[in-house]
Amino acid sequence: MKKNILKNEKKISRQNFLKGGAGIIAGAMTLPLMAQDHSGHENMHHEHMKLSAVNVAIANAAADCVTKSELCLSHCIMLVKMKDTSLAECMEKVAQTIAVCQGLGAMASYNSEHLKKYAMACVDVCKSCQKECEKHAKKHEECKDCAESCKKCIDACSKLAA
Image 1 (tube, helix red, strand yellow):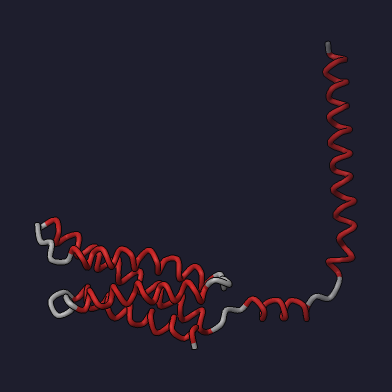
Image 2 (cartoon, rainbow, N blue to C red; image 1 turned 90 degrees about the horizontal axis):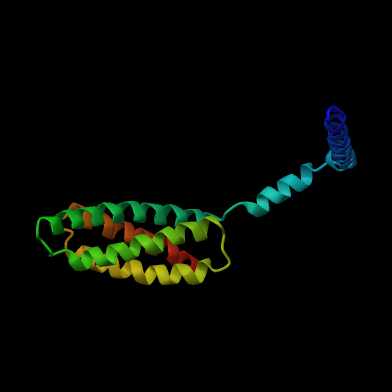
């Protein structure tokens, strides 16, 4: 029985040795590639990957819009819990704005080829939210802040159309 165990251990050892040897050979083959001068390529690569100022502005505006919209939505929910449904329409528009602006921020960050079309759809949603929130802006600070953030997001997205 001991002989079978030792025999199996030798097989495993040979297999591990062969696997390890293959790894060493593969690693040695990549050394010349690693030694090449990539300094010019690296800078070119990073410059190509850099987001435009418009994309950064859109991503930042979208993030701010999501934050302000979430605060507005939270305020609307609190009022509904107190049986005040005067902001029901606002709540619906704000929820849509949150959804669309979360996607907008991601699309801008990823430099999506579809960003321009998506941003134009976001403009429509944000305009609708802005219009509704402005109705309540004098009475509710959260609505005022949300409307202002929608306006900034609309402005940032509109720069893509230019």
